[in-house]
View (cartoon, rainbow, N blue to C red):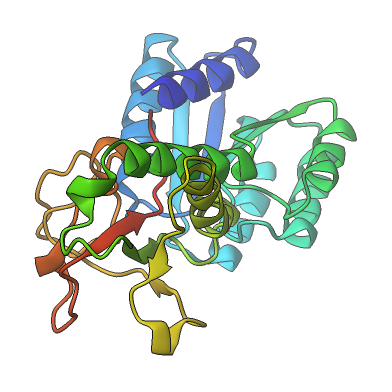
Amino acid sequence: MKKLVALLLSVMMCFACVSALADTYVSWYTYGDVYLSSVRSEMEADFAKLNLTINGSDANGNQQVQSDFISTALMNNDCEAIVVNLVESGAISTAQTIMNQIQAAGIPTVWFNRPVSTNNEEAANLFLNNPASAFVGTNFEDAGVMQGELIGQYLVEHYNDIDLNGDGKISYIMFKGDEANQEAIARTALAVEYANKALVAAGKPEIEFYDASNANNQTLIDAPIAGCYMTGVGDSTGNTVKIDYAAIVTPLSSAVTGATVANVVFIVEWDTAA
């Protein structure tokens, strides 16, 4: 919730001087993301309080659709601000092309949630070169470190409880979120690394991928699991797994059909709204 509030406040501050008679054009990478749906609802409500009009668009995961929407918006006389939730996460060339168009039109812009580059310095330069722009988001690598540390701490404190078969080892299965999202990539890559650092520091063995014969393919991508959405409350829609930190290491043996997972921790990469 803190992330949501901070994001909304930042966007509203950036557009505080936009005329009530003008439109703010907002392009979302998809309306299908549950977290972004909550952001969209709050953003629309806050804009309405200021008598500002949002002209929103669902790119539905298609970068060309998003680029076309922005190009069209810039040709409208009522467009005084652009908000971008980039479809192609980490695609600096795409982001630069869109930014050039917006800057040439003299329109202020805020980008949020999805990184514009795989390199933080490169991303910073994109916005530093346009004084009328801003990015609202996280350091995606920090999110992975934090997640790994939390997992490691939990495992250290509950090692014997989680080691169900008492063999002194804990196995894991990794579920990754949006495959193209740089934040998801970083969280997935760093979660195990930093969980293991915490375990080793406490004199515990590192966690092991549950299938030793398939150790080079340690991530299940976009895997649907009923019963694990955000707070652990059941989700029967088959969405990508997103689970709360408090439940992130709960053994969910029944979730993977056909897998022998009597002593497996499910590590779930997720887009934190906390």
